[in-house]
Length: 178
Image (cartoon, rainbow, N blue to C red; front, side, top):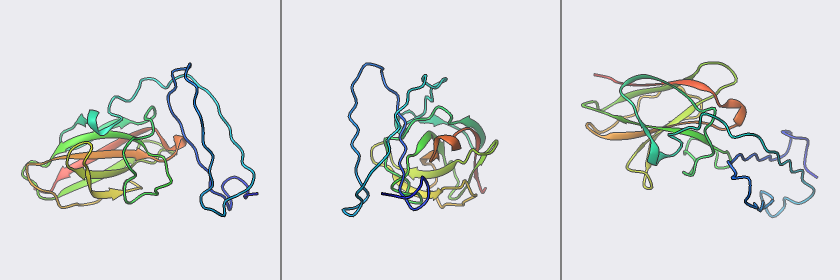
């Protein structure tokens, strides 16, 4: 069998909103062909988180201006978009989406900061449109980055946490260098 939770083992967690009447089937599978043995599965129910996150997907991104935006991803659900390239392909990304115009800038400062621990909010900057987004820059810790951008372009910012315990209030800072 595998190791103790979090030690020498690969653990997964998923959270989703159910309608309370649908039957769901859960597939359990090992990481590789050599991943065999016993497993533990815990399924639990809780009331829906409120208020629901309205900018939970790129298609419903909230438009923001340059500067600092206060937000909260406590009720964010697992994103339908693929994982950001700076993150793990095995993580679940509880995300909130924003759009910001670069204006005349060709470079932006971007940072996300948690209001309180244990909240951890990373972010990814994308160009394109929902369904065909291309990653420009990414930080799993929210560290200040300075990506090059195209002037007069709308960009998508995905603020994310990778565990339910890391969700919460945060500020998102986006500024031009002009």
